[in-house]
Length: 441
Image (cartoon, rainbow, N blue to C red; front, top):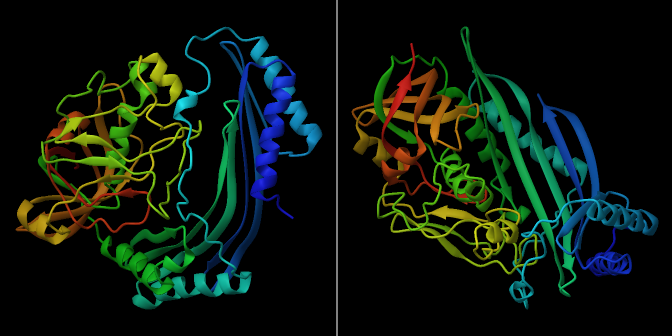
């Protein structure tokens, strides 16, 4: 039987007590456990069934300004004591760092809200198989050109996360995560294309229907058939909503405290500066009920809160944990562990209207490779999508590269669409960038 949250909280308290007994001046610890089911079907047959059960524990100790850390997946009392002992040994043999240590005690979460993150799915392997089969069959039934499948996968997971530190903070909450996806191949003559679709939720009852996921995967694969190359040119580019989150992640990577103090950011020392047009508003809200990235406190126990990252186009805050904040002589923003539930305000146009307004240009629906230089902002990615003329899609395009500089791309943001109902923890519609280089044949 899996340990309860109360038992995990006691485990963390025992860890901290053991660290004190071994002479640590401060310590923090986190314990997680999860269990789940993942099942894949392919071409009407069950391909894999996997029952998962994971657990882990991490302990960090401080001897003044010296730090040591250790982890284990064995939660037995002997293994826990050994992990604490190893962390203490490491700390005693490391050099001092003036910025290391726990987050300030005054910032710890108190009376934090229940964010409704736990909706376990009592689904049997047979029921999971039927659900995945429905998704794959819907894709295969849509069009005879759907010639093959890489499978439909249903995964469900439920678990708990507990964190505590020697400020006296110990807190935790249960979570669940459910995903259904489908990947298919289309074929017409000697042309073959692959695409997918999925949905992911905290509450399994809110997942899109298997049929809708399968159909969308098939439609996407069919639309890519008979792609052409483009000649090299300068043109407007629209990043479709399911691709646009990567642009927001480019922003958050550049404004993380660790990138700032290492001077490895194309937005170095940009606090208060105009980054986007003045209509752009970008926010983080870690307290959205059932949000995929929601958390009442960060990985250091600091209370999370909604905040504006970009207001009227200006950079309003960096993204800081306690260490990077001290490096920059600032205060943590409650972002140890990352950004939670990022969103950009959408405009009034749907994607079809944006294409009409753009007139001629490129709609990007797929990106390949890692093409952002985090220091200079230079951006170059392999891409595929559709060429647009007179406001309408004319034909699919492939084997092209799009290039620009992310600072310029942010400044040249013309509009954000209201087609922001994509799965995931980042809420954004399609992005229309005024001009980029398209390299082709």
